Image 1 (cartoon, rainbow, N blue to C red):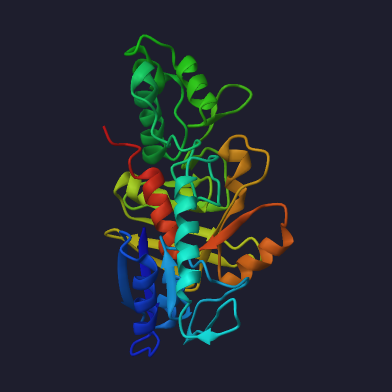
Image 2: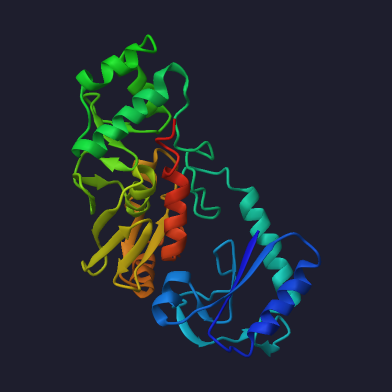
Length: 324
């Protein structure tokens, strides 16, 4: 477990927060980091809901509903009503236990938000198996999207599938059944996460290359680490229609507006990520806008994640896909 204590410089409650975290751990192995946040933009990026904020694996377990990132002083109320500048030791121990249970549950559905199962496919990941030509064809599909912005046809995939003694349609059918990609009624590729063959809300311009559509916000953020390339992501907030832009340079991302966040959700009922998750993973210009969307869609469980969290999810999900 990674514990991050976020504070403003010279926060008088920072030592108390670290002291109580240490006491609550009681020798339990964990990585504890104290980070001083310098401005409001960094508070938004890191998810600091007042100073001090304690993150467990990037999540603030004490954040009240509708919390907005800020540099303000933060107070905590214990179960007995006592107010202090840091959570009580008992509350921290309960939070640590809850974080461990969430991590253990990370083999849930493709995009289960309680555990943020970032690898997808019920914990099995989005990297296709090497056998039966699955990985070779899958990677050929992804590379064709990256090179051309479009889905490959049979002429591109048949030679790849033939090396495994199979037809392209057979391999694509198996890939679709395992939710590595989706096919339309004619058997043509409609999407291969993170790419979409049809227009979506999320457009990605690959540096020195083409423009592609991505399936969702997390998919768009996954393209740079997957391709090891810089990109410009252009999307819109589904609540107010305002633009959200993410520009990556040498692996570092710049978000506009600086308060932008991502909502990660999943429609109940299961099914492929394209229908269960993708329209519920969007960029928002602010936490307030994201909370408005959440209120308007009570049937879609999920949560708002910070810029850093969204980038981490995307990197873990899509970074390994093209590795040999």
